[in-house]
Structures are given as structure tokens and as C-alpha cells.
Amino acid sequence: MTKKEFDSKNLAQKVVSICEDVKAIDINVYDMTKSPALADFYVICTGNSEPHLNAIGNRLEKELREANELSAKAIDGGASSQWIVMDFGWVIVHIMHPDAREYYGLESLWSNGNLSPEKLPWECPEREILTSEIRVKKIFNR
Image (tube, rainbow, N blue to C red; front, side, top):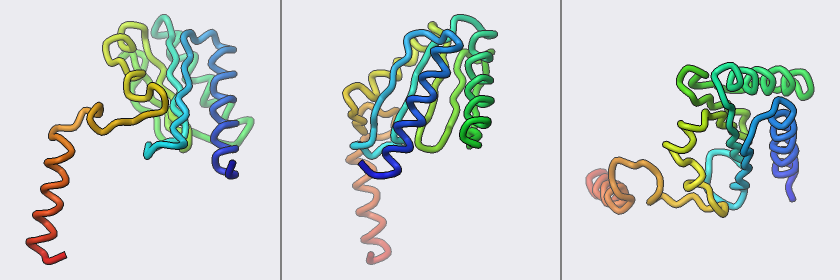
């Protein structure tokens, strides 16, 4: 296990612990260290109401900043949108209302550590992307 994997795993465990403390439910962690994903771990949890979603997000930001001097690189969404995404680098956290979680079904993207390009919301199939790259190479003789 590399230092990065150890650090990202510890960070994911800390995120789960904080989520449990603030009573987030249905917490799932997806280990993507063996996949070509943007982060090593994805954590998805559920809050039952807008105030609960805010409480989870605020507690994560506060405790991780105090304990590890680590602030989220980006935070998107909000309780009113029923989905908050927090990017802590190696760990990305999705805090979702039950309705949003059911509707978007993010778990299907990361089940069993697989991130299949076919399951991502691309506008065109992977083969078309590859075909376009080949055309660019031919045009510019690359």
C-alpha cells in the first residue's frame, strides 16, 4: 500500500466516522484505487432533511479542517438542491436527500469498484470519441 492509498483510506474512514456522528444514514464507501477514477474513494450518505444535509456538510468541513488542516477543494450544490458534493481530493463525498439518491442512482456507477465508461452519462459512445481522436491524428499527422 502506497502512502497516498494509506492517506486516502484514512481520510475516507474519518469521513465515515464524522457522517456517523451526525447521524447520516445509508453510508456507502466505494474504493476506486484500482480504477481510473478522479478520486480514490467516493462516500455517499443520506440526510433526511435540508437542515440535516447542511449539518452533515458543515460538520465534515469543520472537523476535517480542524483535525487535518484539510478544507474541501470544492463544494457544489446545497441542501435546497437535495445534493451536496464535497471534494477533498482523494475522497469525494456525496450528501444526498433520499429522493435525490434514489433518482440519480450513483451507486450503480461504483458498484464493486468498477467505473465503466458505458455507464457514465456521456453524450456519445466511447467508440465515437476514439474515432474522433483518430481523425484528429490523421488531420494533424500525429
